[in-house]
Image (cartoon, rainbow, N blue to C red; front, side, top):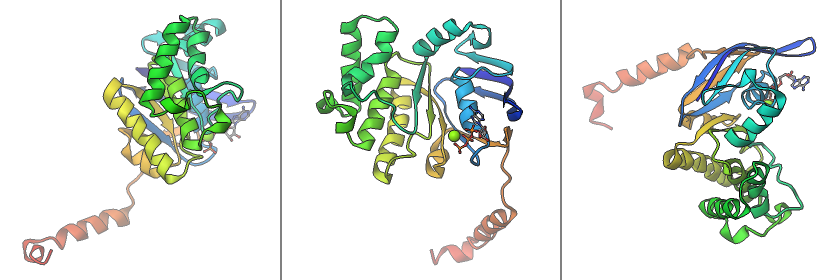
Length: 243
Ligand SMILES: Nc1ncnc2c1ncn2[C@@H]1O[C@H](COP(=O)(O)OP(=O)(O)OP(=O)(O)O)[C@@H](O)[C@H]1O
Ligand SMILES: [Mg+2]
């Protein structure tokens, strides 16, 4: 679904991404983790075509995005990609239903068709009875679910999410995470999620670690390994009876 090769990105003299290669398959849920300032958001924005890389190639759903003009990229983004941010970024003067419809309107789709889909998406999110609420009349968890519905409007090939549950309490957080997995199981939706949430990262199919602008493979701490071996040893047949 996404292939990136040798991606470099600098802001002035600051080199943030130092050669990133990555392949993400259709229907995968991939998390990106790492310390603050490591370049996670920058990488997500490059993959989401919001920043152009200084070097390297980006292919999404068979399209070499690196070759598109700025205008073509905007159209591609609207039609093929969905975004969910830490703070919902819904438009305050529009209702939940209208917010979900916006990407469809930008794409120039028929009003009746996008309204039908927006209603179906809000129903899937369990928000049918909140359709006419404006963002300030919704709870934090509801706002994020509306943001996910909006991201799904144009049936995107991939949804990019940057700390999507970062502003939620534990109950809403768990519900939002479950929603991602439901969308993958039911519709094969691909997700790339930047997160500081270890629980979410541990549930995803693959966890990419970024440190100082590069992908790293985390080492297993020696002490943990030793502990596991010790635990296994105590499970010798003689000891199992007491369990
Ligand atoms: N538009 C920009 N202009 C200049 N520097 C930037 C810009 N965006 C990010 N940076 C710098 O690039 C580095 C990486 O930023 P990035 O936002 O990708 O980090 P991050 O891994 O997402 O961190 P966090 O976990 O805190 O969100 C930081 O040092 C940041 O200050
Ligand atoms: Mg970030």
